[in-house]
Every structure is written in structure tokens, then in C-alpha cells.
Length: 280
Image (cartoon, rainbow, N blue to C red; front, side, top):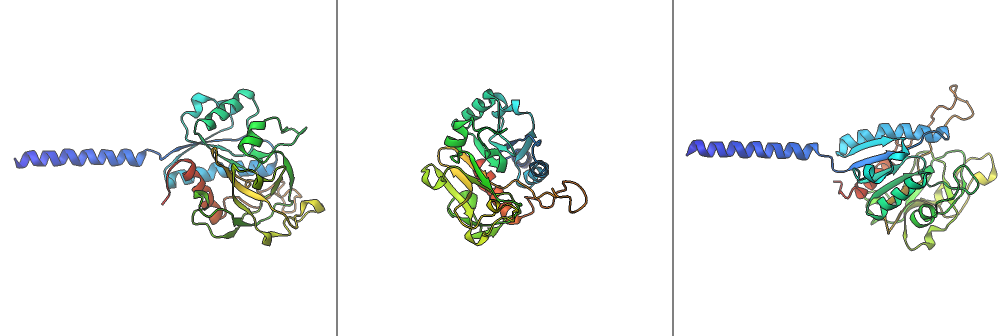
């Protein structure tokens, strides 16, 4: 009888050991990042930084992270493997890629976009020719203007109850960034949840040299979500670059987006909310 009990306990111990090993080995959710990394050295620098930082976070928080510059992978079969899609710098251009992304999001997929992924300007290389994305999904419409040079800003939390802003201070200082203004006033869109905006203490924001590149007042959302989709857009994603060659090496990176603990906390909060998992 003793032998039988011992055998049963041994079997149970092995079973639980296997179960724990499987649980520890299985990622909480799968992330795929799309990028182009061909336009503007600041965006290229950010993409390279992101593709080093996210794998470290994936190992730390036990999710999987893949990245691809092949936008033809934006198709139903490929997307079915992932719970979260990231656009690190640009957006899809081919009609079939856009259709696949729309279907993915409308069927419950999750998305996080950075900085230039929301850019659109009529009669530019990134024409506003995708109404669903810029007006229905993002709500922002076309690009309006930007600050220059890339500078840090003080951000204000607008929605303290949202998972993206969990455990964030009321205000915090960001890494240097080029900040965008948009065509549409997101406050007037009932589907949009503004999560963070530029705090007035940031003004004047930007250094110029052109006067319109320095903001002295106004309301500027920089992180928001759309209630109809599992999505979050973050205006961050433009590293400061030595465009003027003041520091020797041409186009060297002067600042990094992920060198900011509070800002990083917001990104991780966003990922876990999008991946439908709680972070402790």
C-alpha cells in the first residue's frame, strides 16, 4: 500500500512539474511589430531601439515579440497567430493589407501605434487616402503641424481609471520627441478616450528656429484610445538626432525613447491591456 501511495505521489509530482513547465514556457500573448525604417533618421533610430527594447520586455514579462519589415505579412493567416499588432513607424499602403488590418481590428484584434504611424497629409508621400484608418479608427484626421526641435514635454494624465495610465503620476516628463498637432479636435469625438495630453507647464514647447514650430498654448492629446476598438496610439517615437552634425558623427542619436521609466511603464501597461492580461 505504501508503494502504491508513493507511486501515486510520484506521478502527481511529475504531472504538476510538467504543468508548471508548460505554464512557464507559454507566452501570455503574442506581439507582432510592423515597420519600414526608411524615412527620417529619427524614425529609423526609434525602430532599431524598439526592436532591441521589446524583446527584453518580452523576456521579462513573458510575452512573445516578433517584428517584420514585410508588410505583405499583414494578411489574415499571418495575423491569426498574434493577439497584438504594433506599427512602429508607418502604416500599410497596399489595399489588401489595409483590408486585412481593418478586418483584424473589427474582429477583436489589438493594436498599438507610435508617432509616424498616424501621419497623413494630402498630396504628400503619405497621402490621406485611408478614411477608415485616419477618421474612424484614429479619429485624428490629417497631420496639422509639429514642434521642433525634438524636446521633452510634461504630460498630464487625462483618464486615471484607464489600464494604460495605471500607477502613473498625475504628470511626468517624457523623453525628447517631435510632437504632432492634428486636423480634428479629439475632444469632440465621443468614441475617443484621451488618456494623456501636453500639460500647460510644458509651454513654450519646441525651440524652433521657425516661430510656428514652438507651441505657446493650446490643447494637444498625445495618447488616446478608441472605445470601438482595442487600440492605443502614442505620439512618442521620434528620437532626437544630430541633424546639424554638432557632435561629430552625422545623424547620430542624441536621445532614446525608452530611456524613461515612467514612459516605459505606460507602454507596458498598454501592452498588457491590449493582450487582455493583467500586470501585477
